[in-house]
Length: 211
Ligand SMILES: C[S@@+](CC[C@H](N)C(=O)[O-])C[C@H]1O[C@@H](n2cnc3c(N)ncnc32)[C@H](O)[C@@H]1O
Image 1 (cartoon, rainbow, N blue to C red):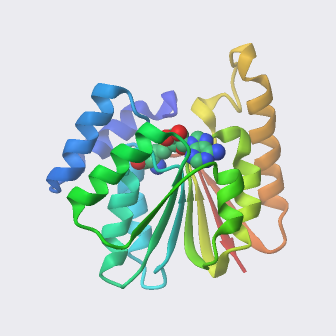
Image 2 (spheres, protein in one colour):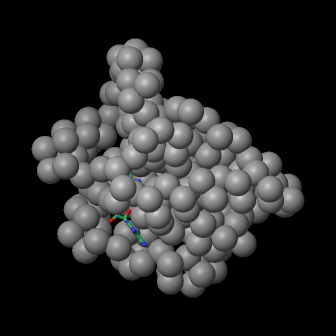
């Protein structure tokens, strides 16, 4: 989360009244075992976006334990939509499987593996892509998934402003990742096949819409 927005984000979070008991249970688990999941306000925004009547099929890069996948999967189930989700870590993949089973959703296709290899093996088109995995590979995830994106489809890129390190002093060990993310943002602004907006919200959100 962007430190500068902590109070504003907390205000927004306090307004969200989550009623889904499984979602609350996963939030508790994530806190206890230190699993990174989207913040509540970003989860609400995802829910809001995928409710759009044009969003049916979704690709998620970075399942973790299934939190955001279940939130989005539930929204598109009503529209007969499917959600493909990819996770590299075996333990998290297994926990996600258990959570998806508990959710009763039958429209989530979980892939265990490295998204660098797995995205290009998928033989489907998507209306919405959620990129939330290793930041060093965001450009590759984007390039692989934009090929599978329908016209007017959206790619949602989370944590793109990386704790604000893109514009303020950062620990030396993050030099490469900061450089890559800054270049990635430039690249997204310059793409001719769609439009891009950068939102200073959560940990920074990037939204790309394909023409
Ligand atoms: C921030 S977490 C995802 C959180 C999840 N989207 C949520 O909000 O519930 C990022 C996940 O991406 C996974 N990951 C990192 N690099 C990956 C890769 N190359 N392919 C697939 N998964 C990857 C990590 O193991 C981690 O569980």
